[in-house]
Image 1 (cartoon, rainbow, N blue to C red):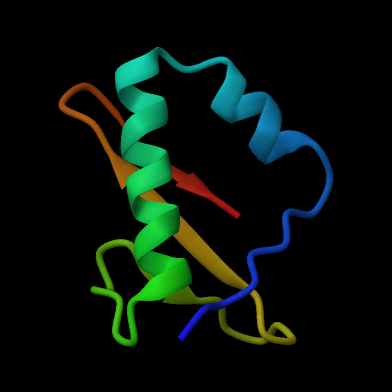
Image 2 (image 1 turned 45 degrees about the vertical axis):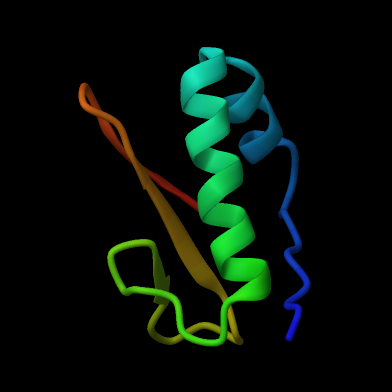
Length: 69
């Protein structure tokens, strides 16, 4: 199973490019989970209420928690 990930605007890419390599690796890991795993843990992936199929993806570092859409 493979899901398609669509970014709205450049905010996600700008956010990704502003991160250190270690954080970028974690973001890529979570996106791969979302793309390829049948069930993704809710701590990484959550459907937004009252939207038309939009989800938020979360990556956690030792210093920060950030929500990306």
